[in-house]
Image (cartoon, rainbow, N blue to C red; front, side, top):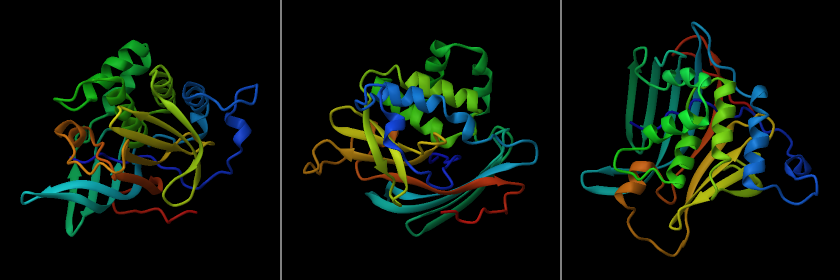
Length: 260
């Protein structure tokens, strides 16, 4: 099943470069940026309460294989997710539409709340467990999985902050500084490369919410077919997700108007 985009920045806050600089005014390292974002999650997303859902609309490009032929295709996804893991996912991938509903626990992730009582080592073990089967749980795979969890789950602010702190311990992350998402919204970017592909995540600098994710090839001239591990991990060059609309709603029929 495709990743569930359950959080998104609703509007672009003005990005002030010095806010993500070290005291010496040198560009902040990725670890510094991630630690600072951890401190900002309280102004970000509120988890849904009883009877509420997080509605999110996501657009992007995905690697898709049908009938023996594979290519990157456009997709649009709408999701309605409750805190107990129930909800609805509606998608259009290329010319194919789907619409599924899920019972409590059907969308997973709700077990993460118990990790609030644990340390970063326990959280790391959980993230390792979320790495797709057959993919080596390298630091690169952990960074990708943490980014997915930050952008896809209804995690409480305290847990989101812990995920940022865990990401800050991964030594290969690199700060991209001030950047924009695919719609031009300003943000701050962090990337991680495994030498073949790079995962780039753009965060809203004020709320610390993920607003966009993209994967690029280390060598753009290399047009090789993606490996099975890259497909499983969702790091095919040229793919992307942009979270364009989001908000709390009270039913799986309700949508939020576009903001920004």
